[in-house]
Image (cartoon, rainbow, N blue to C red):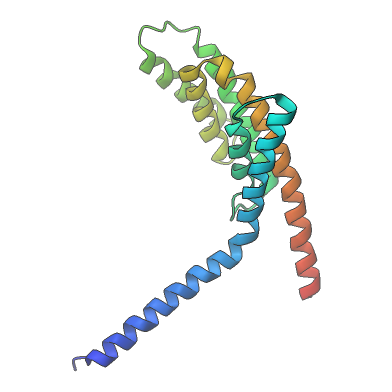
Length: 181
């Protein structure tokens, strides 16, 4: 039996409705954390400008987003992993600057590889080796004056704001659960 055009349209409408419902459900689950991440990014940027005098503290804002991204099982563990990974990458990146700079791509490759291998040895979540590799590359590419201590300071500001906001989110979640019970 061949479905009629009306049946096919009804089936397509049902599929579209189910897709819209899934998307709205995902938005409903994520909006609080996404808003906290965006506000945390703005506050981190502002604090790094005011407290550290950094003219464009992009890593402070990025760090807050990494720490507060929707769907993380633990914002606290993500924050710890971010700090550990960035610190590892900066140290390895600094050490890699002692390598001959005749082939910059080789230096970046070695720094990224070593940073990720060292970070992977900690047995932590993926954010740690990812941040280590990225930090090492940034340090080698931009130099320690731009990507070393300054990046670590910005990351620390973003992580602190992320940790603070995560505690607020956690308290709000517990309050919602208590009201539902």
